[in-house]
Length: 585
Image (cartoon, rainbow, N blue to C red; front, side, top):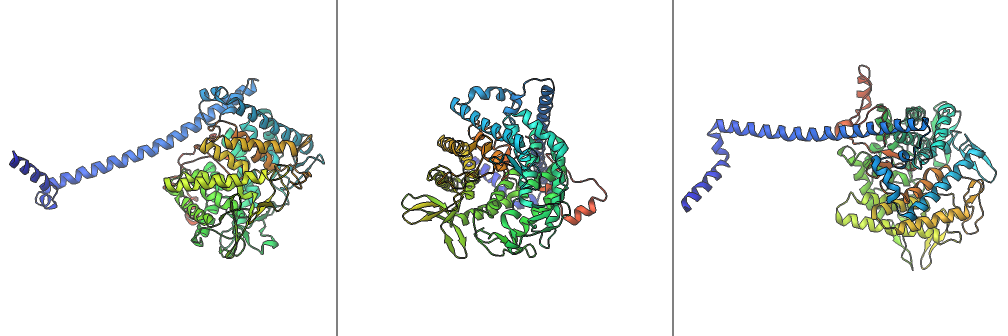
């Protein structure tokens, strides 16, 4: 028995020796054929899985388009459409059950936020319709963004998500008949992209109405000349009529980091929706250029030379003029469905997060964590309220790490959120100032003391509540909302404060109050699958854009390749995109 077992073992061992097959060519051929067949089987399975994912995305888009058509039919016949607005990304049976499933307190608070949106919108309608922003105390409008109806465009998706159908339709009619981009006006490329291009694309992704996509393309075409620089780093200002682009004198002719690195999401989406590669090529070239000069700590100064593509000088900050560059490194990766085609964005972001850790300090005596600014080799104990987007970003990005790093970054996100909440709680009005300074033994003090209805802290609270399930973040958000109601609400809209210590009011209702602050508060008290993180990503102006898979072969070819190919064939189309479908962030 032992000999037979030993003989059997020797026989199997012999089959693993290469010399055995070299003496038996027929068996070698059979082994090779078997290997090829198994390889084809595996490859075919991978192909089928990929094709299945693409087809599933198409079917989801078609399903949403049917819902949009049903919505329009119901509206024409005067039937209720609330259920179709209530939940955009899930099946109808879930939509009808959401109200019953919601916590009664959350439902009550969400309705209060919705009522605030109605008050802000109707005030704008009454006193500033068609102009960029409302001046509530003057009861007049002002054109801060070239008269592009910034509040209307910025509010489209908020109206849609809240189910304010009548208001959404009126906004749509204005865009169809009155929105004109042919203006002799000097526009910010950054602000026009995040508010107007982003707002229009989001409205298209939510509603499926091609009007919004057409308008987004129209304004983006007017912005494109800004990228015609020696390095491809865009100029930050442009004349919408002539296309003359330039940088402002106070920046020394340099481009701003955040202004140049915060168009990627919108322009990539525009290329995907239209099939026109130009937009994506322009903005991804910017990242390619910055990657060449990316430092080991991932922290870039706020000024970039548009002629050489080299960092120029200036502060390193996660606040004003730096902030959203880092945000978009993460969000382009998320929007690309975390595929290999966008892996380099995630890698750059992780490098920057290592750098961020070197900027974090704790105050005394209360141990508030805060993000310093850096000038040369020295750290400044100053943090903008604008940097309070970072806790939400860090929490969102923590899920791409292994367990140990994920826990470390989530802990940091929670610590920073507590600091940002105390920016609000530390003032008499319970509203945050524009920036804070930290002093040994004294914790924090307000620097610039105005409040202009900014959204960054409630944005982070919404992310942390959804990602942790901890209702404490809802309570903090509710306290901030109540402070806005107490200090900023007047009969003709909402205003900022000139001084958070005295409560003296200003005369401006920023468009981002409707686009971001109220939307994030509404979502803070909504079920997490209303604009699910699995299906949507928010641009830096809180406009949700549908997540789209990007396979490696979908990366656009070089400019020269495209120019030669487009002479003989139609524009590139991308897997997972069906022209004219509605997209549901």
